[in-house]
Length: 375
Image (cartoon, one colour):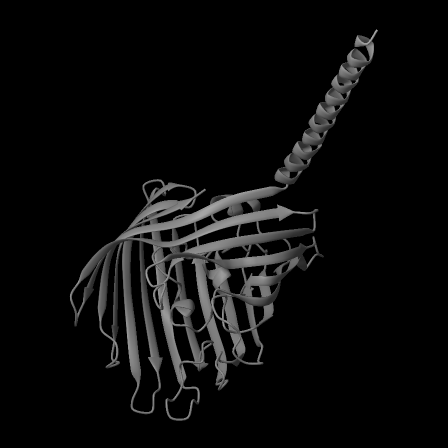
């Protein structure tokens, strides 16, 4: 008879253990379903730039190196049909300070996006808030797809940063361009009559702290004048108004125009700008920190052949700063051959030569084999 309480206790414990196991199993199923639901509305992608470079300096010894040029990892999640978020860490090499040479990760984008279907003219409008893309470079990168070689013109000469802290509003104009054009040429910024973007930002770019109280305005208007006859032709105007990102707050004003043409087998762009100062606040007179006038232009072309598996591309940049002691002029020549693996992934062989009349600078030529891996 004494065994009965013991047997009952064992049976009770067994039932309790099974109940706990069932509860744990049910909890895991609920968690798994939540994770699967979240993943259904999430995407992860990457864009990695690797290279082997031989650098020839006119006034110093040459060098060669394997390098990770950049690495972007994109995390996107849609909360509903209108609201989504994005986080993009940016892998780069620290080139100064105690951490010089370290591979470091910083944020390129971290924003919330609200989009709407819009109306007949302002179609597919959206607003992004946080660490966001700025109006022009994001547009140009969809036309000149060789960021793997180096930064685009206005970004490279420090007139515009590709991303900043603030907000950007954008919209396509007049609905979508013909679907056949989107399939053969490009689905990016596919407004029938063009697109528009405007924003307000800290002004120092995504890799700098805010060093003054000023906020900068930037804008872009792109018009497609003949969507039914020459759909690849666009005219764009971009600009900025604000102060350079230093405690002295030198004036910064930019006006630039670009004409671009995209087709299935070739792309050509031409742009020119005039400005006072730049967004970093460094194009100034050393004696009084007043912003200096500067101007320049850039030409780019790409020709695709052998069923668009190969491309020749070239670019020429020119930049003039009207310094007190005399104009400082810089020129850049870029030429390359690309093999397109699949999608955005490609192998690029290129030569980049830069020269300047500044006594503080040295002419540099870079021979490079680069790989862009996008997945």
